[in-house]
Image 1 (cartoon, one colour):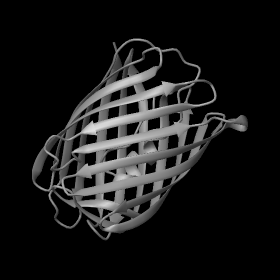
Image 2 (tube, helix red, strand yellow; image 1 turned 90 degrees about the vertical axis):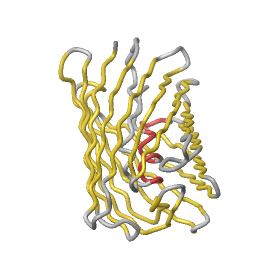
Image 3 (tube, helix red, strand yellow; image 1 turned 180 degrees about the horizontal axis):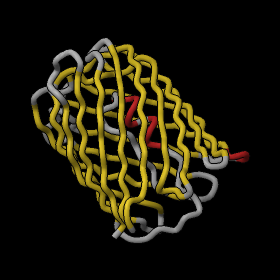
Image 4 (cartoon, rainbow, N blue to C red; image 1 turned 120 degrees about the horizontal axis):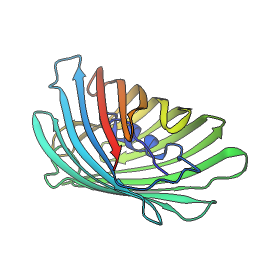
Length: 259
């Protein structure tokens, strides 16, 4: 199983929660080490400084599922910050599997000091796959708690998913809704996927955990394809608009290989 997320530049709830549970690459045995290099950029329409990020992810496939470690360096609000993370997928049986993720931002300036996520999936008959998720993000002096439920469905070469996410912080409560779809292109490592987000979410508006709950809308598109041998390229574009930060567009790219 290998799950792909959109750029981190989507909102806290809209990016990491809905897109952490993309359709599993089923019935495909994989071995070896996966190495991925990531680069991202986001441009604002109203004069905010651009956001940038670069990172490295290394993953493997142990007997229990998959595991990956990541380092990322980001620039937001005129500051640089680092993040390290560990992500694991547990294949308990054909009837359920789970994802656990821990990310640490030692500076707790741009990234949360601690970001914990857990999600459980329950495949059922007819290609349906419900899931539930809980996430806790902590900065010095403020926490964000997010919970969500989703329903996905496999249909031929398609994976379709709808999710509701509720967020709670000292600034208030929000609820966002996400519709997403992936279309596989001949093999699991090649696909096109997209998502649309609408609702109220917790949005980072400044460093060190400065947050605002705001109405937002976003759309994103991702394409991944093979270029030569074990090498694959992924490109994502996103457009987002909300009251807190205004209109912005982003682009992210990654180059990965199985060694």
